[in-house]
Image 1 (cartoon, rainbow, N blue to C red):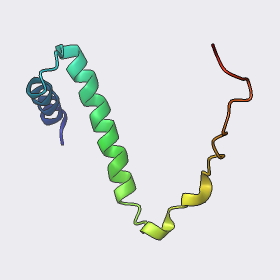
Image 2 (cartoon, rainbow, N blue to C red):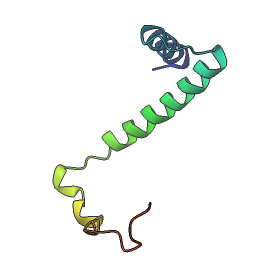
Image 3 (cartoon, rainbow, N blue to C red):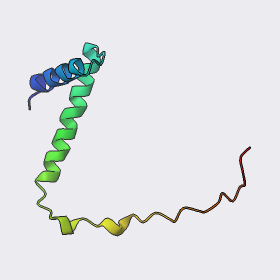
Image 4 (cartoon, one colour):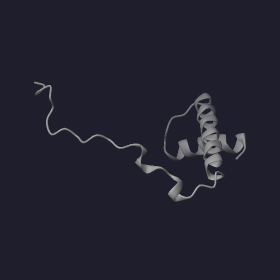
Length: 73
């Protein structure tokens, strides 16, 4: 999507959602949207399969049953 189409998309979407968006704000949103689309395109072209994702890298600690600091009254 080129810059003009992306900006028009942002403005139209904001209007449909009834979000007040000034022209300068719309331009900034469009720049970030284009950057995000470029990053997504790079990920799409990486050719990874579902089994290539390392799900077990992040493993959160169990949630404590009580707060060791005591009640916050």
